[in-house]
Length: 182
Image 1: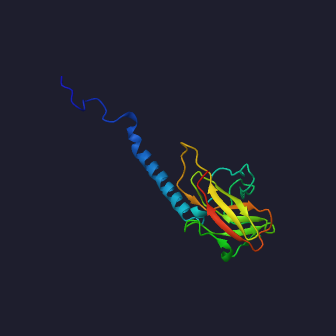
Image 2 (image 1 turned 60 degrees about the vertical axis):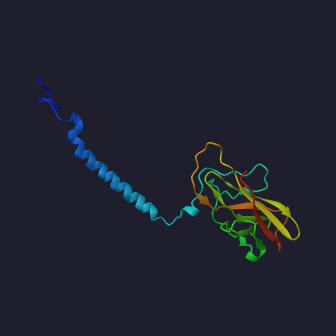
Image 3 (image 1 turned 90 degrees about the horizontal axis):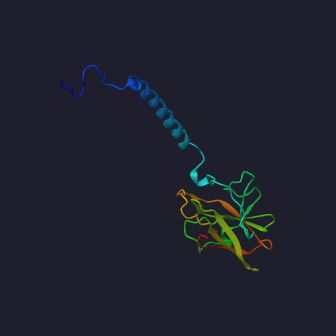
């Protein structure tokens, strides 16, 4: 007796295969819903540049600077209400890369600088007043290093960070500089 590829009396399909059309139809419907959801997300007015970073922010142990953190625990991307922009002619950002934002505001009667910083992936923006003289205030901008072996996104964010001053800024010039991640 010769048995071929499809011997007589044996079904050509497995038991559950007769429902495959229904499963494919359901999968198509789910796929269409997914595409519509993604399209709706693309039309959102919130851009990724203004999206908050994941995780919670905490102030550095030194207390020299902190990321402005509202009660939600996420960094701010807009200066606080009532902050006053420092005129561009009193902000020296020559030491920063050309694409780095050079926005500086004062808050709390000029005793706090609110600086637009840059961070990306798992890093978090840091800033501290490293020099305060009668003529100028030097703000060092940096970001935290990602932990070794940690997977991070490849995004770039521009949160505002608060840098406390010993005295109100007044007419002093703000000098922005950047140091490597720490």
